[in-house]
Image (cartoon, protein in one colour):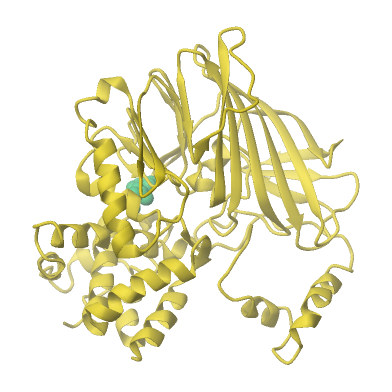
Length: 471
Ligand code: TRP
Ligand code: ZN
């Protein structure tokens, strides 16, 4: 589902003005769809990922059904997408780089399709009218391959020794299910995963095994539901041998699991998750999802990922501050999502600043001290080389520009507006944009409104210059 804080920019872009009474808006929107049926675009215009996402529709729900055979590492799968056309569509694209497709159906009837690179172009028998719901069912089977990128690492479907884990930032969702693979289009998800009885299946959200058949032929089906809107890159499935812990935090389920061979390293995953969620709920406001947790496995990707409601941790990523970071993303990145990948600092700057704040409030160095240590980097050094607010596609996970200077930007803002306004800003930002998407401009506007100050120069100096800002 596409949501934004304010509908006005889109209406203005469509040639409407604020003088048109609100009641006229629905018919005005419908009338934009009365024209000819034309193809949806192959991308959403993201400057870093021009083919990510697709134009002409808005996904409401993904139902992902998978059968996984560990011996062959093959999947056989059906993904059913419920979407709404936002214009009259003669055809539309999905992002898909997964295994061989055997069939595509639109509204229950066979549709024709072609694959062009990462695009799956679907032509339904009849055009899809603007404003109307439609369903797309894609059936496919084979061995999925992860998306490997020299600058961004490995993402998507990852084989492990005893199963597989899917985690997909920034554009790896397409490796295992067809998607409108852009953070701007959130949707609810159900996962129905069939795997050998001896293996455990976990995914985002909560387990729901009512009415699911099995075991049969040694295979069992597990169902998980994410009932809050989620960007495709935050979808997660984990299959393998796991030691599972179940508890609650703040009245919501806390479900954590680790590969048994990681028991020593992750023995505190469950309790640290509960502790971090309790602290973050105090500082950032109510936890946005209906359960929490974490999954630790041997992935060999060398990162952790904030998969919605239940982050994934590679071996080596068990430090308390990593857990604090991934769980802070539940507010900043997952619930409050990105309109554009260019604003990735909004995710990483806030999650990294959560680590600084956690240390400050748990007997460690103050955030001011952490800031001061990084600020010692000399003007002209590589530390200041990229723009934090526009690092370039290959720089989107740059440690200095995005993680460290992202957090420094948040701290500079805190110093400028004072602690009281700053902590109000954190909670207001999370509450007002819950389950939605944002831009840096939205943050600037809110910070200016709450503080009553002009913050253009501060944002400009910290985000849009490849240079050390003045103290
Ligand atoms: N977003 C993840 C985090 O900070 C990290 C991450 C995902 C990452 N993919 C990456 C870091 C690729 C470097 C390269 O929690
Ligand atoms: Zn992060």
